[in-house]
Length: 205
Image (cartoon, rainbow, N blue to C red; front, top):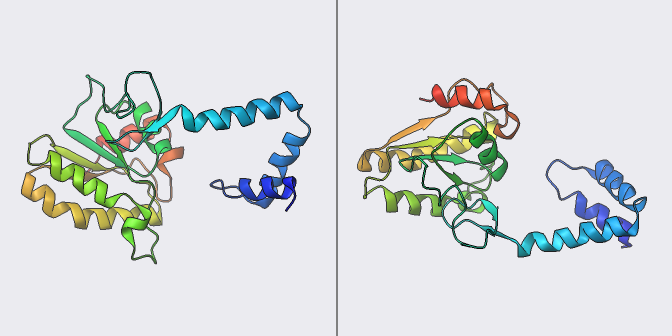
């Protein structure tokens, strides 16, 4: 496989990118000067060296020179630590943050396909349960919000999480809620505007 074909194949692995778009990316890079391509390659190398995954929420963050374990949100002093919002991916977290939400987060890492029975393969269920079972007995949780997209897989994942978390919420006496009707059916949280997310948060049930 030559470099053009190899890079095209690599771009198709990006979310939402098909072969045609991947080829357009490669063609764009081909007409750029060598300094641009070298700078891009260098930035990609630095991406791994200068970032870390938060041990609490699993969000990817840039190293700040002080800690490589907690992101700025989980380590922040002015957060509402008794409210935990569960989201699918980092982009959802960033969008919810723009809505004015000031609780904490947990990034699942994806959703559960309808036909799959391997829950742990698709989301960080074990890690989520471990965190809630750690904080629950300490009465650190007042509410856990299932902030998932209003898509088929988002709804499917929400139902599974409700089944897993409801007994725990009853035992540790915290509220288990889901986003309200601010999100229309079929919409992904990543693409919702901050006002819509704020409405969904305020009308959560």
